[in-house]
Image (cartoon, helix red, strand yellow):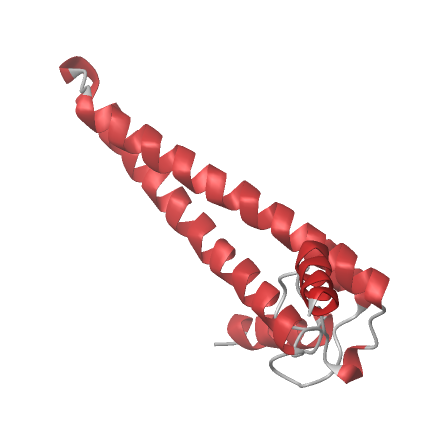
Length: 142
């Protein structure tokens, strides 16, 4: 029984089991690098969101009546930016979840593998370059 608990502890210390879609052809080393990038981005975004919301609420608590319009505009900007960052954070967390369920590395639109270079640059991406370009072309022609 001691050996089983040691294996579990060692497994938990190493982190979650990472799996990509078989079509993605990502090595264990690439998966670990992508996971580490996603975790770093998750921490960065969470801190940035916290900071922007804190700044926005702090300005609300200590208003300078002489510059109220400017403060309101700044507060609105901070909250919009925090909302944008929150959407990106959701994408990062979705990618982390897909890394653990074995769905990572394939385009959600076409089902084709996403290139390793694209994943390394933007590990939370949902689409291959080709599919994203197709979406952008269709949006321009609407």
